[in-house]
Length: 289
Ligand code: KIV
Image (cartoon, rainbow, N blue to C red; front, side, top):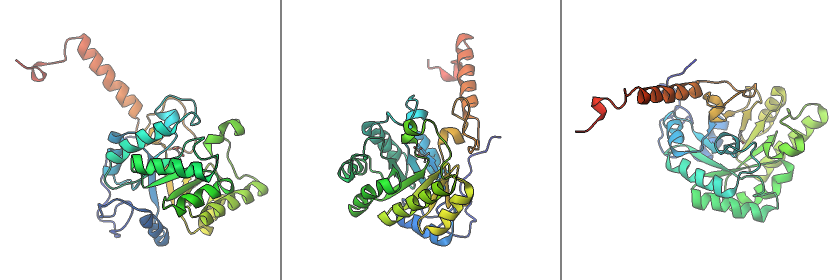
């Protein structure tokens, strides 16, 4: 099913709403905190370039993540592991330039914060200064609390990420659902509380049973951003290429596809090619004399 690009519904009651609100200034982490207090749900998408980001910004998506999923979706790597600070910084700057309203969150890639808080601060500072992002994201619960604390003390808002953390794909040996069983569930709760206590303004819950994600969402005063974590999370995020049917092959079960862009774009390329070989393009109206 194809969904036409719609503007946020201006008839929505709350003018401050993250999605559908009327304010055109850039969203801040204070707006995100206020949305949790109002019990308001909000959408987040990934973006890796200025043009796509501008489409999502115009559609009213309040938070865009320049995710290290760019490794798989944009740069042709097999996982997020090879993504570098240079790549994230370049593409985050493009996304910031392409947007006016969305809060832009830049992902800290594998190897850019695991050494400790000082390394995390150096790389997060680079993303804020060189790319202009409004916040950064990093993976890990208790194990990343020191890093989160120092960044927050330095004035850099942090979105945390617990549950399945794709940068650990080599340790997991795949992408398994997390938090199943009593012990794993307790660890996930500890991780979520640890990142909140460290000062994170939001936390991504990836591939977590819906009941556990609902419990975390109830307990925390910061918003949870679910991906494969059920409907009770405060926000939902999808990788845009999955959401819009641009990804080749199978997508994870939790993905809902709202368009079939891969088919549409391939069709446009074929139609162009056929016009060129058949001398139907350029036509008179495309030519100069
Ligand atoms: O890199 C990414 O896109 C992410 C989201 C899936 C949350 O971390």
